[in-house]
Image (cartoon, rainbow over all chains, first blue to last red; front, side, top):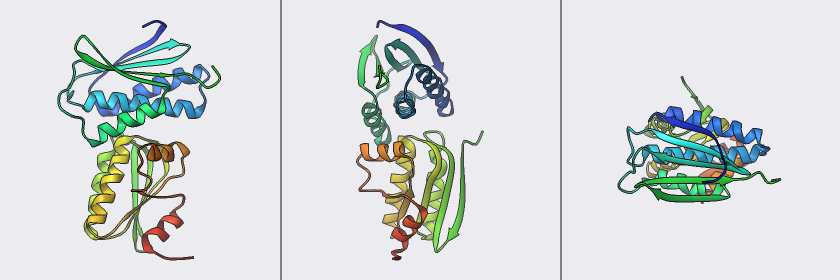
Length: 125
Length: 117
């Protein structure tokens, strides 16, 4: 992936800590000219991506969050291992929500681990 | 750390829950518990998100589950949402026709009690 890596976080498997990941991303977005509305959208998309990795068969594994500056921001989210089974109703809703809030939403597999990649650029960029 | 405060009162025959803070994957279970307790009493339930700064899908899931529970028990839940982004999330998930979403507590109480102005 091209671009400059700004932050790499490894978040312990605790739902309370997802707040830290979204606050880091919102701070980086604010520094890059995102509007308040765009920041709120990105925060929520990151929350949903992280929660899905934490809860979708991944209990007890950390969530990795990498934020890359590529003009806009690219946020890559993955767990230490892939989950199994189907996501529950709330997790499925969360990914629908995340997809609607960013410019690009991709789920790709790398080294046997599913990664969620979110891209969003400020409207003025 | 308590990131969600729920103040509960009975007003005009309804159980009014005023939430302050963040309603997300970590805090949504406490709302689910409070709605379950209120449904057991058979009261209509007003959940105000006016002072909720962050709402994720698990928070929305708690509202959906609570509404289902209440309707199964013959009562209902009305949700007060004033944030455009929270309203947008509800619309993206196409839940705006399932949930009773109101712009004010007055409107929500009218929806719950059937009262007219």
